[in-house]
Amino acid sequence: MKDLIEYIAKSLVEKPDEIVISEEEAEDGTVLVKLAAAQEDMGRIIGKQGRNAKAMRTLLNAKATRENKRASLQIME
Image 1: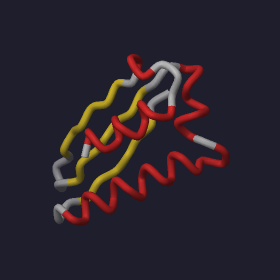
Image 2: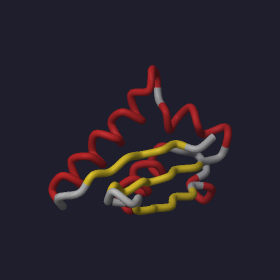
Image 3: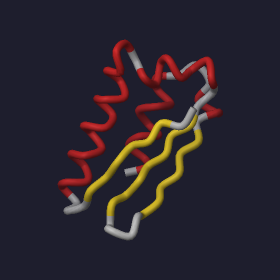
Image 4: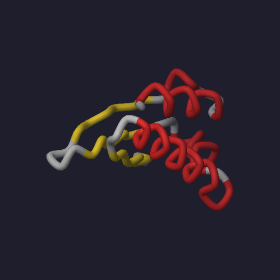
């Protein structure tokens, strides 16, 4: 799941080298994917009215559902 978000995020930003993604599993089995990027690229990650962020969360949930898991995307500032 981490790879999917990494691919999408790196294709959106101007500084793909500064993308940092970590993946943690909570006690209830939910996978938490944390995404951090350069400050000037945060607008590109989030998108107008949060559309890019919402689309990434939708794709992440679709992939998690196929693997019988739950997932959440957290965008770090």
